[in-house]
Amino acid sequence: MTDPHLTFGFTDEQKLLRESVLGTLARVLPPEKIRALDAAGEYPADACKALAEAGINGIVYPEAYGGLGGSFMDLAVLGEALGYHYGGIAQAWSITCIYAGMHIAMHGSDAMKREVLPKVIAGDMRLALCLSEPDHGSDVAGIECFAKRDGDSYVLNGQKIYNSAAHVAQNLVVVAKTKPGRGYDGISMFLVDTTLPGVTIQRLSALGRHTTEANHCFFEDVRLPADRIIGPENDGWHGLMKCLNVERLNLAANGVGNTLKIMEHALDYAKTREQFGRPIGKFQAVSHKFADMQIMYQTARAQMFRVAQMLDAGLDPIMENAVAKAYVTEVNWKVADMAMQIMAGAGYIVDQDMQMMFRDARVGPIGGGTSEIQRNVIARRMGL
Image (cartoon, helix red, strand yellow):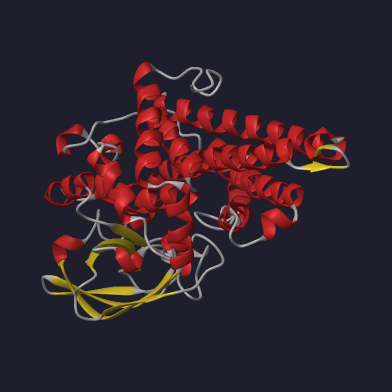
């Protein structure tokens, strides 16, 4: 039975959503399969398809395009449940439905929405976002990937890197310049079919998140029909910023759920592992670590749901969302580190789950806007 503290404040529909997500994933993505996929570096395609068949993909999209028109609180509940089951499935779902798909849902033409969103909702199309470049990660104003207008087409040239799950995507949402020069003015976004001539995708080997591996994408004279642009030409920066509230909330929700999973995993170990004649959880050196984990987790969860409520109220909680993203992902990593220390050798061995959760949690303060960038945002909102 679900702890009522976990679902306090949820609507009946949100409680059912959480149960549906966790029930579906328990069936199609049990621990042994997660371990196998992680070891093989294989995308969790079956689990993603099962989520789509359960109607999960449509929650974040407008009803006019086959979605359910869910609230930000619905997304927070969903994101937390996904992160709790496994960080990799949370990321796999988010890459298509949030990081890339939300740009189409918010800024794509009506024709593009009708073409793409029903396929995403049905689980028949995977997307990925291409933003960072070898010389420009957080520095979006300096991107060099360029799309030049040529009659009724654009010709795309450049590189993108660290593009999670691009190797399994049918389409990429690519951020490029359409006006020469450095700056946010002149940024545009495009939907790029990965089978087009000139598109090359090379997988990268990363420390964690092996089931949604990073990639290096190359675009060499890729010709795109003009209708593949997402939103107005040269105005892509504003589109990126509008989607950030959704992305950061989702990342925070994933991190909160994953933090609880790690804490529970280590707690089970501490209650059964005996040293010096008693369970190690009875030693204050260990029990206080769990108390600290609980303090951080409860604080992170409260901030994440507060942001969702503010968004549903029509506010624009830029600072609060940056706080949530930075704090939650840092807590996720700190709790993983503390859990590793508690489990010691048992956590460090590769055939145990702790080392995987430890590796996977480390990307949180890096991806989706580093903790340093979040602090820049917070400081600016404070007038500094």
